[in-house]
Each structure stands twice: as C-alpha cells, then as structure tokens.
Image 1 (tube, helix red, strand yellow):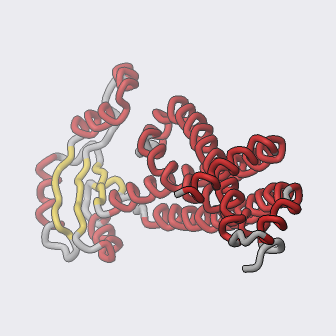
Image 2 (tube, one colour):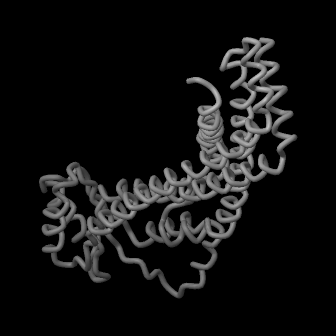
Length: 296
C-alpha cells in the first residue's frame, strides 16, 4: 500500500512539474480520441440505419393504382397468401399511410395539413417468411392488374452494407495510426521525465529498489495523462454530437426514416471505450520509455 501511495504521489508531482509536456501529451491523445469518437459516432449511426433498413426489408409494399378497389386488393391478398415465402399480407389504406407519416414527422406534421388531398397511394403490405424469396414474390405481385409499383430495396441494402463495411475498415486504419502516434508522444514525454531523474534512478537501483518500484510512478503518470485525455475527449465529442442531434436529428428522421442514436446512450458507451483505451495508451507509452533504463 505504501508503494502505491508513493507511486501516485510521485506521478502527480511529475505531471505538474513537467506540465508543458504533459499538456502536449494530453492534447495529442485527446485529438486522437476526438477523431476516433467522431468515427465511432458515424459507425454507430450508420449501423443503426443499416439495421433499420434490413428490418424493413422483410416487408414488401405493393403500391396500387387509384382505380384499384379494396375488393380487388383483397383478392390479391388471398392470392399472395398462397405464394411460397409470404408470411402475411394485409391492406394498407392511404389514410393509414398518412397517419404513419404524421407520427414520423412529429412536430413538423402540421405541414401535411397544407396538402389539398392525400397524395399517398393505397397499398398491400407483405411480410416475408424467407428473404431469399423476395424477388419471386415481387414478380408475382407485379403481374396483378391494378398494381402501380413494387419497390425492391435489395440494391439499396447492398449499398448500405458496402458503405458500412467501408466506414468500419477506414475507421480501424485511422484508429491504429492514431494510437501509434499517441503512444510515441506519451513515450517521449515520460522519457524526458526519466532523463531528468536519471541520476536519482541510478541511486535508487544502487540502494536496492526494484524495477517495479522505480517504474511505478512513471507508469501511473502515463495512466493519468491517458485518463485526463479520455475524459476531455468524451466531453468534446458529446458536446459536438449533441449539437449535431439538435440541428439534424429531425432531418435524419424525415430523409432516412431513422433517428440518430441518443446522446445520453452514446456518452455511457463512449466513456466505457475511451477510459480503458486512454489509460492503456498512457501505460504503454510509459513502459516503452522505461525499457532502456531498466532491465525487463
């Protein structure tokens, strides 16, 4: 316990004694984590949009002509219910579609009141039991008289998945590069402290101090720098993201039919990622800087 108290006391002393380099290290790691956080937020929101799109893909919507009666639509539903791959089919009126739009638009729903008439078509919604049968079901639906269009979103889903994979690959490359840069910066900061205390370290070794007793304060110093950086980065990232949600959250719902991930939810998870990462970067930089001065 005494050794731990000594390590923390010395670490805090060294951080404030070498505050210029400590601040430089904190800025470096914070900048790295800030960029990482923005990539993290982008990946999470793209992932959410992808999952929403995939969940919607198991439901086909068959748009009907205005001249198609509900009785004709019910006949189509009976025929579709016998098609392989169809789990359920039901009639979806233009009035129900408008109510769905009102709910989706939220506070902006009053804009729909300016419409002279409901421009949405009646439709049939089909739930698929097997996504691989989607193309076959669409071909059957298109053959019915009175059908205006049957959108196929498979190409859209494929594009979204490609974008998601590209973002994840790019994010990993950026993360690896920035982590390496941060470790080097922290290592150099700790190394300056070690050089300034080289004579003191030599005396401690002569009187029998173990390598871990000597290494402890420097290790804690690196971890403190990483911890401060992680907390600063979380605060900055969430401040930026909260502003993004405020400005573009409603537009994302209208344009993409999906909401942005809540800021409060991301704060908890981002802190859980950044704190261990920042502390690990600081500890690794400290260990690297001490290798040439202590036997490993």
